Image (cartoon, rainbow, N blue to C red; front, side, top):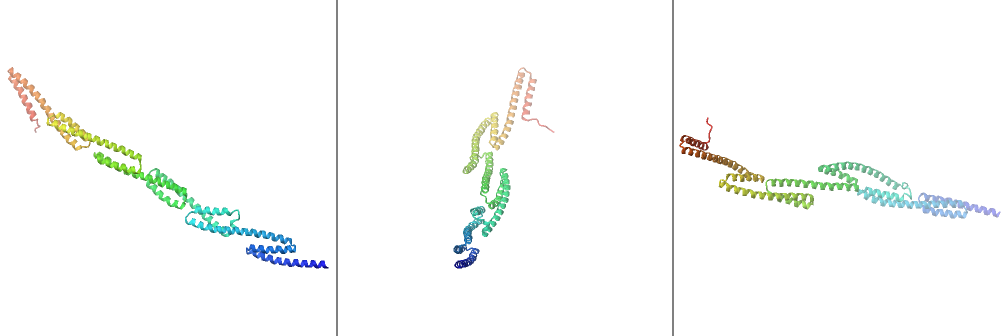
Length: 386
């Protein structure tokens, strides 16, 4: 009887404990649903204590498993909280990078974030994180597509630029650079920016060389014109100034060429001075010979005067002495005719005198008539009458 009573009392106690455990389970489950995992663990421990008293091993095992799950949930929530806190910090940096248009750096930041937590938890399980990553991935795909289009446009412009540059079409090359700049600003790729920067530097150098060549060619034209006018001092001054300007810009090859030209001009000036001195000497000799009626010698000097005067550009002197030379030729011809006539008259006179000595007066008279006729023809040249 006593044993039955004890069994009844024990069973009643178990029923009471089970009832209390059921109530505690409801409370623990409510804490779980509200994600109050620490409170749920406390309640679960109370259930284990009660189950231990009642010898309810299955309930003890159940609650131990429940507590393990709760601890995992606490760990998961800790990780999620850490991830969300990290996301908050990331979004601040991310926004600043986007404002600075540092899109690739912003993407690196997101990828590092993704890689840091991918082994701990599926980030898609965290709504905020999932939403942010999806939004970023869409933006990144659009960015890559834009970048691809920009690269294609820049590739086309690069082909044009290189062609214009090689053919010295610097105006179109410069226009191509201007077209590339806004694309490069949008692309923001350091390697391409560096390449186009080199293109700009090369073009600027080439433009400077072209501008310098135009200036040099224009100056050389002036120098050549001055040399042609035998204005050597002005030519040397202009060329020396040009060389000095180029020396400041460091173009050794061009400077060497210009210095050679300067030497040629200096040598030409020296030769001009020598020829001018010879010209003055021949003019002086000409005047002396002309004063002495040495027409033949004067004519030889005249020939040299004309030759040198033409060579050193004194065309007026050459023209004047050409006229003088023609006059000298005329005088020499007359002198030659006079000398020839004198010889002829002298011979006729001698013949006439011999005839007179032999008393052949008529033939002697004929000789004198011939002399008279020749003198008359020389003094009064034959004229054509109507």
